[in-house]
Length: 335
Image 1 (cartoon, rainbow, N blue to C red):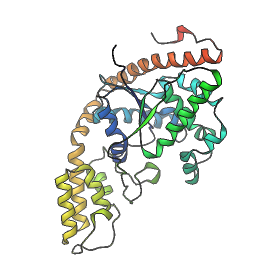
Image 2: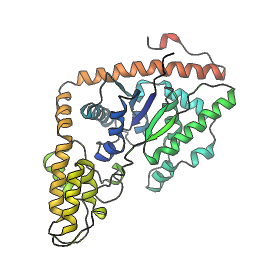
Image 3: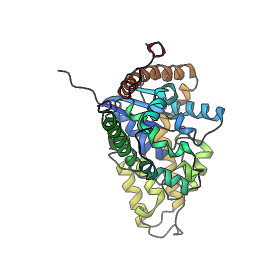
Image 4: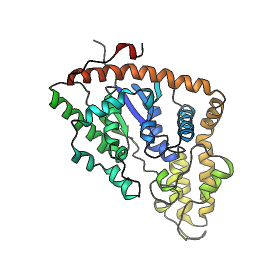
């Protein structure tokens, strides 16, 4: 009997320029996993509507994410890269799951509470984020979901929703997904020392170059120690970022220079700038080439979306039958 291929599923919101925190926290793992299973990666444009409410901006950001992933090494022959909205079945599944999901479960969501605490308006879409995320995961019979530590709760909530659905209807429609943390467990500091996040405005964009990139790197917050002072690498934001993009040997060499004195933060920032350019130089070239052929990029998204929808239509069809509805019009499904 052939071994069943592991289904890997993850998504990323097109809510702004991707940064190196996105790369080391998620994208790097996504690219490596495309060789280890049946990978489905979606651009979460439904989710983005909670913060991006301008049609031209949303369309541009979706295209940017597609270019970024392809430039960084996603292979369309190995992994599906598609728009979330090209699979409308996830919205229907969101409603089916919401009918068996308790309010208390959603009220305990860390991401919702954190965003409200940062001043976002408490809209229903933001509150319902975990249900749509559960539908994204369950619609494709996902086995493995690469996530950061801050998203583990959403995997647990997805498991709870699937179990509630199965208990309510006496069925087994969905696979049980399991979260997968990055092996490095990297928490990428932003230019201010907090976790790098678009929400905090402290990011270093992956595809920034020239003066904009230099300005960002040189703005990294450091302490007030002078050039001649001995410095602790573990408390230096510049070194923490450098070790992500430099080799182990280069990382240790900078650490020794910081500990020895006679080496200023300005020098460290210049080394970091060079290391970022070296780490992402090839990806930037690939992205620039892809940007000249947006028809190809659109074809990648559409083709992958059709394949993903074919899977989701079967899963949602089974869920419809479980609740007592017809499985849906065959004519409306992709061939």
